[in-house]
Image 1 (spheres, one colour):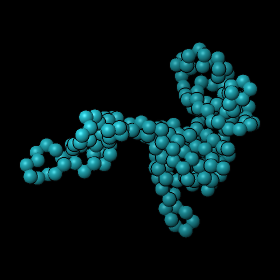
Image 2 (tube, helix red, strand yellow; image 1 turned 135 degrees about the vertical axis):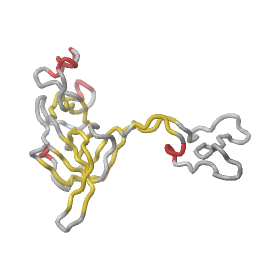
Image 3 (cartoon, one colour; image 1 turned 90 degrees about the horizontal axis):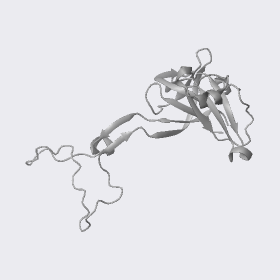
Image 4 (cartoon, helix red, strand yellow; image 1 turned 30 degrees about the vertical axis):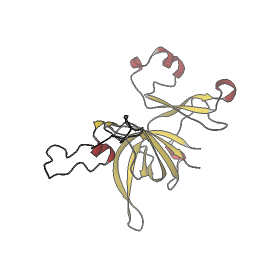
Length: 203
């Protein structure tokens, strides 16, 4: 299994040889270094821990500095669970391991939208605009259950929207720019510009 960490940049389009336009999302890949290899004997499971990017060393606490040693000061650390990992601490994960056309799965945190009403959060149509209705255009309407004196479980109501971990499958690598360390993935990816994305091959 191949994996890498990157940062979402923006969306654009790429033209194929036959002239078809493919919508893609640009993902900038910074330094990816293996910071720890977890084994079943020691940790109870098998995984590879990756450090991504860099940050001010003064903003890293002492336990993290001792963990990273001389490998650098990473902005983010993530783990990928794989069977029988062959990577070693200090190995670099390069963008060149992915090939154009390879199917990938991308996970990221979606945009946070704060507290939203039922029209935006659940797609409600709102109330009628006539017949004496005055301020009910975006109201949820009745939430009662008839004879029941409580709100049914799972009732769609207003609340916090966004900032959820979203996984998009069945995407593919449309183009790779090794000089700029940018990977172009087909389709739209969750999150804003600068969001950390996890790209994992589907093989």
